[in-house]
Image (cartoon, rainbow, N blue to C red; front, side, top):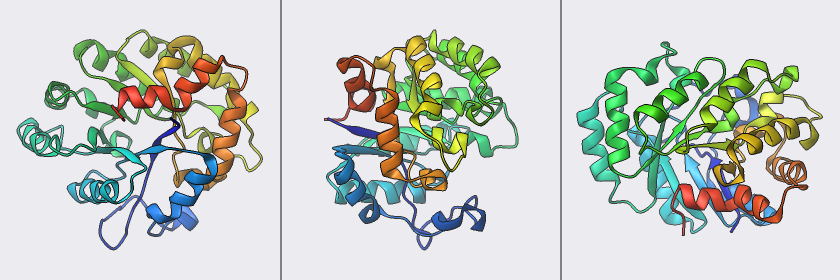
Length: 278
């Protein structure tokens, strides 16, 4: 089974996305499942994971409706207010009844406080999340957030965490440095996983290829192992520096020298296990 572990939808008439403005060009419009469906068929993707694009119940409800309408949606990563544990518990009790709801994410990179995620009341919200057996997608954008992942993993060892977009390494500058140190540290915790996603927009070149990403993916595999890595397109954000097909093809090229079982894990097996996709 091939799984895209990270893609988005948004309907600007139904949900507010304040961060999305004209600087995002062609993706500053409603983008819905029917636009992605033919791209998935071309790439041979069996299932996807829709990931929240706004800290709101409206966004989560919209994703869950989409999941019910399209059989290729395998999971939804929604949102609850982690910083209000009592409310988070109430909403998780409600959402846990939906078979598509598998975890949550919060746009921590939009918070003014770069240490938002390690506040005690937020940590309490994450412990509640773990008690429901649900996962946490961390937008661990380097350098502000990746450093917190080991702290979260150690304090809440029963919480399965996935680092989105390999924490946005400095591909544009062709550097590893401190990112590599922090990323390696995070890999020491068995409850931490990572998404091979968003690398084309991290590079932000018009003529990028899988060769530009390979050193970073290879490093991630060395530290995490393929069984804790999963492919994600980050579509439609991916369209800011390419398109779905190019991201899929170039990722495949970058990992083409891996063992077959490693390729299978990255392109689907890990995501199926992490998000409990049948």
